[in-house]
Length: 419
Image (cartoon, rainbow, N blue to C red):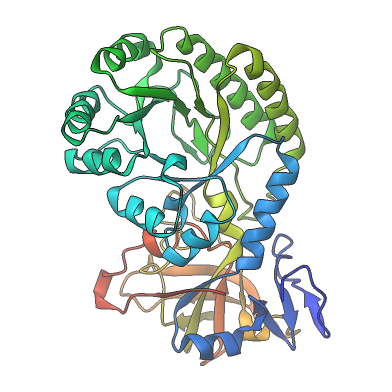
C-alpha cells in the first residue's frame, strides 16, 4: 500500500508535523505497506533500515511536476548507495551521479545508462579514471592532474574521454547546511583558473561536454537556491566563451533540503521550478545545445527511510529515563549529531509499535556503545516504552548506514531493506 492510499483503521502520524508521509495502522507505524512489528519479523533481526519505494516514487513524481519539462533529474547516490535503492531510482530518474569506482559499479550493475552517469570527486585515482573512460561515463574534472591521466587512458583504450569541469564558484549557497563552493575548497577548479584549464582540455583532445556547479547542500530556502542557480548559470555562460566545444551538459547542482528539526518547513518547489524555467528559456538561445541537470540525493531519498532499533533495556538514572537499544551511532551517525551538526538536535523519532499511544513520557534513546556520544534522542516526548519495543528514527533514508562507523566496537552490521 502506498502512503497515498487509504487504509481501514489508518491514522496520520501525530508525533512530528513533518512525518505525515507514514501512516499508523492498529497502533503501529506502517512502512512499505506493512505494520512495523511484522516488517521487523520479516527482516529477521534489528537494527535495520527500511526504505519505502512508494515514497521514493512519489518524491520523484512531485519533482517532475514542479520542474519544467526538459530539465534532467540526476540521483546523487552517495546519499544512499544501497544497490536495491539505486536500481529503483535508476528507473525513475534521468541519470546517476557517482563519487567512486565502487559507486560506479553499483550504478552500472543497476542498469543506469552510462551516457547519463557522471563521476565526481576530488581524489579520483588513476585506475578509477581509467575505469570511467572504459565505461564511457562523464568525468567531472576536479583538477588539472586529471587531464593527463584521462588523455593517456583515452589513447590506450581507444575511447574518447568524456569530461565536464566541476567549478568551484566565487559564491556560496546562502543558508546551506554544508557549503560546497565559494572560497578555498578541495572540490572542483577555481572559477578564475578555468580559462586556462579549458585550453588544456582542448589541447589534450578530451571530449568536453560542459560544467558542474554545486554550491551547497541541505537548504530549505527557495530564494537562496534560486539565487545560486542564477549565479551558476551566469558563471557557466561566461566560462563557455573559453570552452573548446559547445556546452551540452550543465549541472546546476542541487542543495534541496528536507526538514529534520522543530521549526523547519518543507522546501517550496514552485519558485525553484519557475526559476529553472527562466534559465532554460535563456539557455535555448545562449547555450542552445545545453541540457540543464539538477543533481539531488538527500531530497530524493531522505524522507522515505526509517531506522529501526529494538529496546533491550529501560533504565532510570536520577530521574531520567534511558531506553537502551541494540543499535546507535555505529549505524546512524547522523542522528547522533556527529555528522555535520554543530549543535546537536534530535531527529524526529517515535516508538514504532506504539506510535499512537496516549501514555507518553520524556525519555532518551541511547545505543549499546560505550560512549556518551551514542545518543539517538535526547529527552524527547515519546510514547512510554520498555524492553522489546521498537524505536524509530525518521528522515533516515540518506547518509545513514554508509555514512556510519559500523565496525566500531565490533557490533553487527545493520540490515537494509527496500519495501
